[in-house]
Length: 74
Image (cartoon, rainbow, N blue to C red; front, top):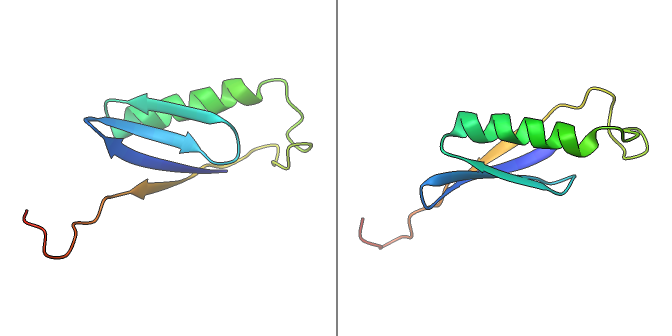
C-alpha cells in the first residue's frame, strides 16, 4: 500500500492511496503510527485478497516537500 505524508500548518498529514484513510499527528513518527492503526482498523474483518492486498501488506510512504519557487525570496 502507498501513502503520502506532508507537513501542513504545523501538523503532519498522511493519506493512504489504496483505502480511504487520512490521519494527522504532531510529528512524523506520530502520524505514521496513527496511519498504521487507522489502516488496521479500516481493514479489520475485510477479505484482503478481495481488495487486492496481500495477507501481510506493507506500507510505502512518500514524503512530499514543497519546492521553493525559482526567484522567490526566502
